[in-house]
Amino acid sequence: MSTVIRERGWECFAIYHDELAAEVVAGNLRRTDCPAQIAARAGAALELGVRVIVPGELLHRARWLWAKAALTELELQYLATGELPGN
Image (cartoon, rainbow, N blue to C red):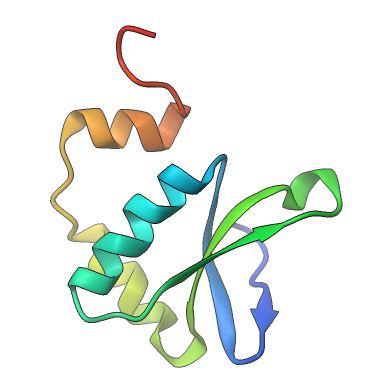
């Protein structure tokens, strides 16, 4: 992600193609005690998608937690491509 989007003290952690992918990430962060929300964003083509936002002061922690996340290969593939295997 090249641009940090600020929204009332929350910052954009990542942008995903759909709500399901964003919820996987937000749910993982919440399970590790990092508040996270998802927010749809309409606008310029580069900003379309669903954002995962976290409190600005926890952005570094969220990145660290995500780097340590234990996701399955299927989950990682879905997040990367937006497609489930076999589709």
